[in-house]
Image (cartoon, rainbow, N blue to C red; front, side, top):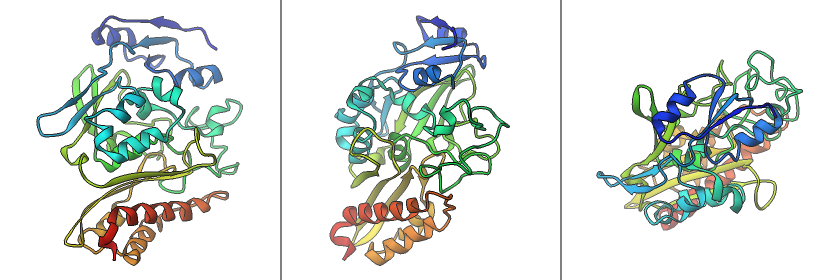
Length: 330
């Protein structure tokens, strides 16, 4: 591991000063991903600014009826919190399907969103990777790409985002609160996590030196039927081959509200806008759900080894939506 300077500031202002917006600086919170990447030589910061004790670690109700989740809230705590996970099945199920209990006890909400891809070529510094070393190439394109993207990828990168929480937050229309030198700004999650395009090294729209300080859940995040399902290679402690987060409400037998997001298929959670548009206002019959999901996944561009993901994701989505629709699907 490369030698580095470790700083434990007393306030967020001191943390920002210590970080300085320098490319060689990095914030440290739970450390469950960053420290691993440092051991592998993928991340090589010269200064680590420890903000674990400074990040907001509370879950609070907001005036409009939503909830503000501090970036320092641990995964285990969020899953069971009476204001958040306990009231929102899709959120709790996503959190509890990710990582091990020990990791959930350490990993923070902000760090969960900022974790980097588990692409094996990204983690192997002997292989070319545009995400790790821009301009070096992508070994996954013609390599073993069974676990890689089928949607939204670019000729420069086919990596997927590993977070389960982010998929649920996408379906809940969550926003990310960011604090930096210019103050506080909020960004819709789907605008915070980005597709690879020409800059696969940039996972987010976070400006260097900015810090994720909270996640904002809107009022509509609670009370609606919702669910998260994940397909993986073993029963626990594995990243998603494909996952689905969905919220679905019906009125008089017709879909009055729907949100559908896929995980494990793209560089960020994939919000299924085409499927949502087709189902809204319709009776959620098996035929209608199948047509909507198929229309969404028609945009998939599988790689050599992962065409199975399209079928897998489609089956997951149909199963989850049928369960949420209940009697309205008949």
